[in-house]
Every structure is written in C-alpha cells, then in structure tokens.
Image (cartoon, rainbow, N blue to C red; front, side, top):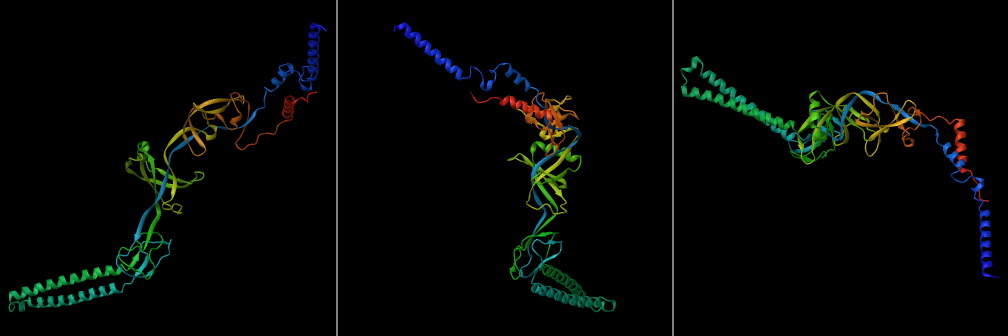
Length: 416
C-alpha cells in the first residue's frame, strides 16, 4: 500500500473516533435535553427571578419629644459619717451592749467599763467640796460678826482684813473642789461608751473582760441615711456642670449593672470639687441620696447618671435603626410606595439604652426600619411590620412561584 492511502485511512479512523465520542456526549445538548447555556430558555429563567417578594421588616416612626441630657460615670458609695468608737478612759470592759451590724441611735449605750475607780474619785471630790464649803461658812460667819457695828471698834483693822481674805480663800477652795468633782464626773461618764451618731455598727474589736485603754478601738459606727456617692467627670464637662448647677439642684440617679435600670432616682448633686486632678484630667463630684431603703452601701461601685439639661422637641428613633458605614451613619427610610431608601443621619446623643436623638436627616413621623436591614438595598420592596409582629404566612401564589423557581434552578438529569 502506498504512502498516500495510509494517510487517507488514518484520517478516516480519526474522524470515526471523533464521531463516536460526539454521540456518546449527547450530541451537543445539555443533560436531560436542556437547551445550551445562553439560549432562550436560560434568558427566560433569569428574567423570571427579577420580581422578588417584598421583604418583611419592622418599622417604627420617628418621635418628637423633650429629651433629658445625661452625663454618666462610675461612682463609689461613701458613708455620710463614719466614727471609730474608742474609750476615753482605761479599765476592764464589763459588757458589750450591741450586736454586730445593729442599727443604733445617737447616745445609745455600746459598752460599759468598770466604773468603781472613777466613782471613788468622784465621791472624793464631792467630799472635798463639802469640807471647803464648811470652812467657807465658818470664815463668812467670823467676818460678818467682826465687821458688824457693835464689834468693829474692838477688832483691829489687820484682823478684819485677814478674816475677809479667809472668806475669799475658802470660796476659791470650794470652786476648785467643784471643778475636781466635775472632772471626776466626766471621767465617770466616760465609763459608759455611747454611740456618737445614729448608724450601723460594724464588727467589734474587743470582747467583755478585756482591759482597754484610752484609744483602743471598740467598734466602727457608719451613718447610712443619708449617704454620699462620689464620681468623676472629664474636665471638658466642668463648665456645663457648673452652669447647669446655677439653675438649680441637678438630679442624680444610680443604675444597675445589668440593664441600666434606675435603682435610686432621688439623689441631688451636692458639691463639685475645687480642683481638677492633673494626672487624670477629671474633677470629682459628690451627690447625696436619702437612701431610705438602704439600697446603697459604703464602698459599693455604682453607675451614676446625672441629668444636665433637656433638649426640647428632639427627634428620637430606636438605636437599632441606625446603621454605620465607613463614612457616615444611615437609616433605611420607608417611602410612600413601601420601598426603602438610604438616608444619612447625624446622631445628637443617646436618650437611654434603646433610643438615640437624630439632629439631622429625619423629621417627626418618618418611618425607619429597625429589624431586617441585612436583606435590604436601595429600592427594595418591603412589608411593614409593627414591633413584635410576626411576618404573614405566604400565599398560595407565592408558594407556587417559589416552587417554579426551584424547579427551574434544579431541572436536569443524569447524562445519557
């Protein structure tokens, strides 16, 4: 066989193999008989998905109301008065007349020191006073008799002067005895240790039977009603606080640590410290609370909120409605045709834990989306829901349309 025929046979064999492979691959059609990509069927399927169902979202209207302006800080509760009770005389402690943690009144007996030594000193001072009073009475009688008209001519002037001086001397002795008796009485009274203030006792430092001395600690009494709360604010807010304080007492509240709810709302700012801390750039403030229910305790850390002023007719929306981008804050605003548009806004401060003030971008009555923003874009059609309202059940037409879309997207079969 010539070379020419060999080449012809080789070309025919290659064409036959290619034809058989083409038939095995389905003759150029998609699996299951589908039209090739980019054909009319494909174009029709893409067009049928453009009219999507409305997105259910929660909608809230912007409100207009007077909004209080608050300053917040962390504070520490401090006792109104704290007194360490110590004896002023020494001796054996006979009794402790309080329970630890007990509420006591001013002047109430807390402890008793053995009074016998001090009682003896007081009795001795009284006896000395009575002795001097008797001597004074004798001197006064002698002087009065010698200075009478019927005896004065028989008494030398020198003796009369001596009698008068004796009266003065015994008067001084009586006064000195009285002073000694007063001092002894004070020492005797010190054996009764009483509470100097009304408050709550702490843990006692001594037990009955111990010998205590002046300066030994018995117990600490803390006054809890009223009570102080100390807190710090940045120095940039000093002028605003002082200006607001001139208009009247500033209401101060304490908040809980979980949800920020008000625990005590009856506090009043009492004093602003007279200097700024150079190391922290803050100034100290002190508020006074009645603490009638005993909710505040010395040393406790609390969140403090002080009302500085009030914004009249402010526009307020829920905080979750505000979305943030790299350039600005924005909200999804509901238009009249139930579509949404992006609206840039400027926040004017926080009202509470759930609402913010919008100073620019919205007006009262504007409806904004608070839930469901992640499914939205400019021009999205929405179904408006009230807060807490569940989305409506899908209709039969919507379910049928959804099934058709799934069928179009999943149509096909195994290769033949």
